[in-house]
Length: 243
Image 1 (spheres, rainbow, N blue to C red):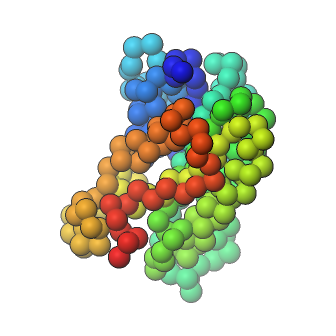
Image 2: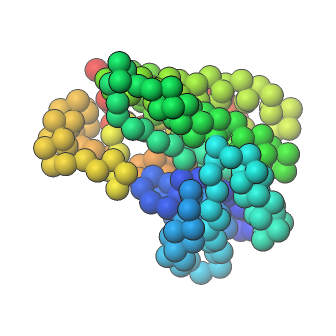
C-alpha cells in the first residue's frame, strides 16, 4: 500500500532526531506535520522540499491539553486525516538528585510522560484502522545515568505506557511501539569533542549515532512491514546497553 496521502505528526520536530524523523517519513511518501514548542517549527517545515509532499509546522506545547487538541484539529483541517503519530518531544536537563526541586521533576514528567499521554489520547480518536503510534524513549529507560533520575524515570514510564496502550488499541488494529535511542549527535545534545571521545568507548559499534539511525527505525515501524509488531521497545544504540 502506498504512503501517498498518509499523514504523520512528529512532535519535537524543529531539529535533531525529530526533524530527522520528519524528513525520513517525507521521503517515504508521507505528508508531514512538524510540531514543536514555538513557531520556529514552521521554518523547519519549509525546508522539507520533496515533490508531491506537503510539510507544515504547528506550534504546540505537548504538556498542554488545549494546545495538543488544537494540533490534532489543525492537522485534520489541513489534511483530513492522521495515520501516524511520533511522540518525540522530550527534555533532559541534567541536575543532581539532591538538588532536584519539585518543579524540576514536574517539568520533565509533564513534557516526557504527560505529553505522550495527551497526544496519544487525542490522536487515538481519529486514527484509522492500521494507524501507528510511535514513542521515542531512551536507553535511559534501561540503564541509569547520574544527574538524570527524573529523565530516567520518565522514559521508564514511556516503555510501560507503550505496553499498556498497545493492548488497549489492538482491537482497532492500531500499533503502539517505542524506539530507545542511545547517544545521538543532535543540536540538543551539544556534545563536545571531548565528550564524544569519552562516550565512544562505551559503544561497541564505535560511533555516535545520527538522527537518521533513529528515523529509519521509526519509518519501518510506521510501515505496513511492521503491521504485526506492537507493544515493543526497540533499542537503537550501537550496542551500548549490551555492556
